[in-house]
Structures are given as C-alpha cells and as structure tokens.
Length: 212
Image (cartoon, rainbow, N blue to C red; front, side, top):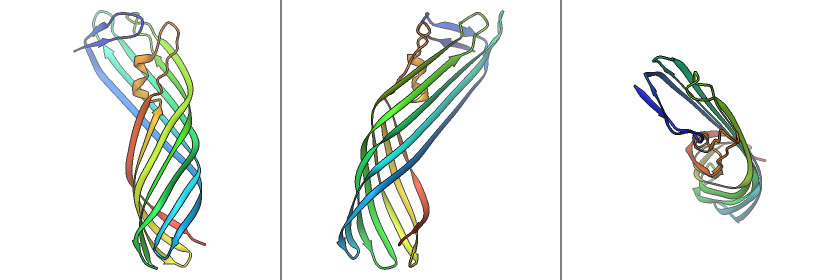
C-alpha cells in the first residue's frame, strides 16, 4: 500500500509499501465535586438548588506506528499526550418527579464555567532519513464549559441508607484532544496546541447514599 503524510514544514511525502499499521487510543475522565444544597418544598414535591466547586481531569493519549518497505525500509512512530485540568464553580438543581417514603425519582442538572489548564506533547520518530523526527510542546489556560443533566432513582433500604441508580449526560467544551494536535504541531518552532475541542459522555451508574 501507500501512505501520504503531511506535516507543517514540507510538502506531502508518499511512503510506498506501508504495512503493519497500528493505532492505540486511551481517554480517562476523573471528577471530584463538593456542593451546598438548599431544599425548597416538603414531602415528595421538592426542588433543591445546588451550588459548589467541581474539578475534572481529562487525559488522552494517541499512539500510532507503521512500517514501510522499499529501498530504505523504516518504521515510523507517532505519540500524542494531552492533559486537561478543569476547575470552577457550578450551579444547578434537583427536582422530584414522584416518590414516597421508600423510593424517589428525580431529574437533575448542573452547569458552570471553568478554567482549563491544558498541556500537550507530540512526538514523531525519525523515518529512516525520509522524513525528520520532531517533538513539540504546548500549554494554555482558558475558559471551558461543563454541563450535566440526568435522571436518578433511589430506594430507602434503612433509615440512614439508600441505594440509587442514575443515567446522565455530560458535555465538556474547550478542551485539548489528542486527535486534534497533529494538525497544529509545528516542526520549526517545536510548538503546537489546540484547545477548542469538545467531548460528550453518557452512561449509567449505581451506588449507595448515607443519609443523616
């Protein structure tokens, strides 16, 4: 086969006899938050206002490699690593839909503007004299948006213990993503950073709550 590589320094270079192409991608999101809550209403018809601090950490890594045969066979390897640290304040609300002394069903929403400190590193190994190797680094600090909404159900097991399950969606805008860095990496200045990406998560979780 044939592969065409474009960088920010030279015209595209075509590699003949490309084989053994491999790509590996990892993405991890971590979250910690603490909130103050004010409940309005009584019984099972209530509205709770929420305000607090939230921290999110989004790390991604993208690695690729291929082998090219021909008169000068070589192996090319590329690696991109990004780290996003978002911290800021959020507001939101929880609203009951139905329930009694044993169970409850509610909807919730959160939104906030965050400061995102992001770091990026990109490296490309030398390609057997056909193309140069290089490494570039970049960092930035800018505003980002985080919004979350979902549905939660819980059941009272004991007076002080509830089990719950929930489904939520989470949107993050204004972060550095691994797949967007190669296009902005500059060989001459050995710098490059793109922090305008957005990600969307959704899924179900379950756990226990201690009530006192």
